[in-house]
Amino acid sequence: MQNVLILGGTRFFGKKLAANLLRGGADVTILTRGSIADSFGPGVKRLHADRTDAAALRGVIGFADIVVMPTNLHRGSKNLSFSFYPKV
Image (cartoon, rainbow, N blue to C red; front, side):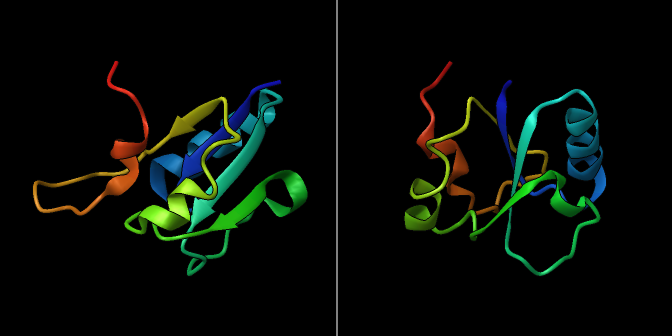
């Protein structure tokens, strides 16, 4: 079973992705700021952190086999998520 961490997961694409992964048997964790409730019940693990906080991200992303960040970024976005993974 794959451990999948979704940065987000409560709205739009992330919500649909989490639902599909759960149906497929993945072990799903969503990382959110905790400001929006989700409808997954006990089916997912929940972590709370701000993805612009480097220390918070370092503490939570190491366990996952797969990390997905289904967000729209723009040129001015401060998003540290990318800096934790090697270039591929």
